[in-house]
Image 1 (cartoon, rainbow, N blue to C red):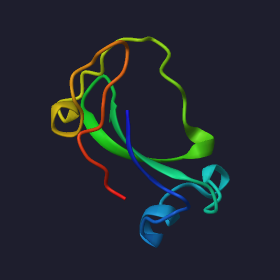
Image 2: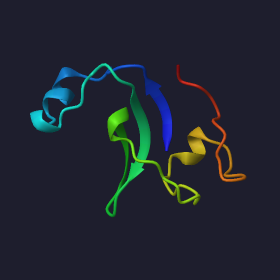
Image 3: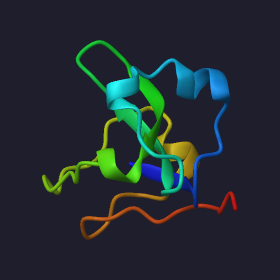
Image 4: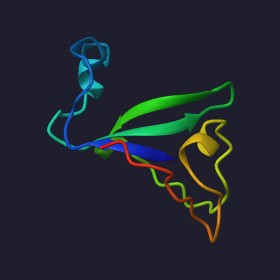
Length: 85
């Protein structure tokens, strides 16, 4: 679930260098801050536009930070409580 966007890369050079060179995204594209999860945990991810995958399930997001950032799940969407940028 996206909660903020940078028009182009705005993270640290250390973060960028930690990505294997063959998988490193270009910096001049939008990067998204999103609530993410896997089988073991919930986390906040920083993802380039080229690596986004749409969630078309229509199901509510189970991340524990959702109530802090968004309103209730209504008609298949969440409303943002406030804007970062």
